[in-house]
Structures are given as structure tokens and as C-alpha cells.
Length: 206
Image 1 (spheres, rainbow, N blue to C red):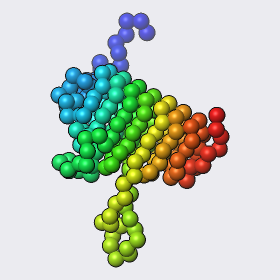
Image 2 (cartoon, rainbow, N blue to C red):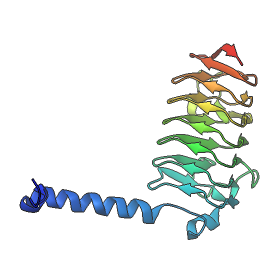
Image 3 (cartoon, rainbow, N blue to C red):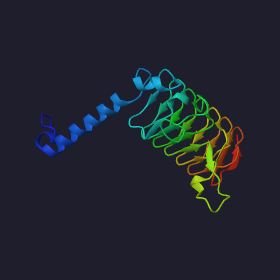
Image 4 (cartoon, rainbow, N blue to C red):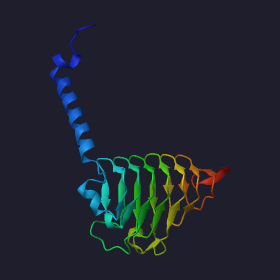
């Protein structure tokens, strides 16, 4: 009805909910990491126009992380070089994310040796990428305590990884590759491939 009051004005519970939502939206905008943020100075490189949305889940080893320009990293993303804050790293170039990338909500990029994500790569939510895996040969030692192998990972320019994709150590994904949701990539994928499944298999090359 014209001239009627908004429904929330007469309901304290709804008014408080609106206030909380507005406060959350304000905090989300203000707490995002941008090139002008002090936190951005911790990174090896933090490109112009790049944003890490609030809140991140895990964020450490920034001195070995490079992010290009105009890249958006969604909320609840884990982005790390090394296993824990303060760990001595093998180099200052462990994780590299290119220009104009989109890293989907709740994804994890955990680098120990080398992870390179080239320009214009898009992730769906909950993508997991790591360059390290544990051994399991000795049955007398818990797998998590056995020596870890580290092999570089590279994702080619213009590729797209669907929701819940896992990329394992040693994998190179060529440029312009589409990986279907829920796939586990255990081997290299050629340029222009469409891959699905666990383990991911190529079903088409464009």
C-alpha cells in the first residue's frame, strides 16, 4: 500500500536482524584485503585491483605468495605457503596466482614447493589444490608423519575448475581446460581438454 510503513519498523526482532545484516555487510567490505590494506604489504606481490574477501579461513606465508592484478579471491578461502605460520620456507615464490583470476568460495590453495595458477583461471567453490602428499610405504608410521613428496602444480591460462575439484601434486593442466565438478585430477590434462570424474579423464578436446 502506498504510504505504508516498512514491515520491519513495527517489529523489533526484524529491525535487529536488519541491523545485524547491515553491520555484517559493512564489516565484509571494510575487512576485505585490497592493495591499499596494510595486510597486502605482507605479500610478495599483491596486484592492483585484487581483492581477498572477508573472512579468509587460513592465510599465512604471504611473503611467498604472488597475486596478479584484478583477481578476486572469495570468502572462506585458505591460501597458504607452508603448513603453519612462521614456518621456514624454501623460497619466496611458492604460490603464484595470475591476473583476472577468480578463486571460488571456500577453496584451498596449499603450497609447499610450487603452485602456479596462470591468468584468467576461474574456480568454482570448494576447489582444493596442493603440491604435497604424504608417503604410506611404512606401515609402522602413521601416514601423516611419513616423509611428504612435493611436486609442482600448474594450471594453464583461461581454464575453469568446477565445484569441489581436487588437483593433486605433480599435475599440469594446460590452457583453456574445463574440469567438471567433483573431479579429482591425478594426471596432466592437455590444452583445450574437457575432463570429468575421479580420477579425471579427458572426454573431449576442443
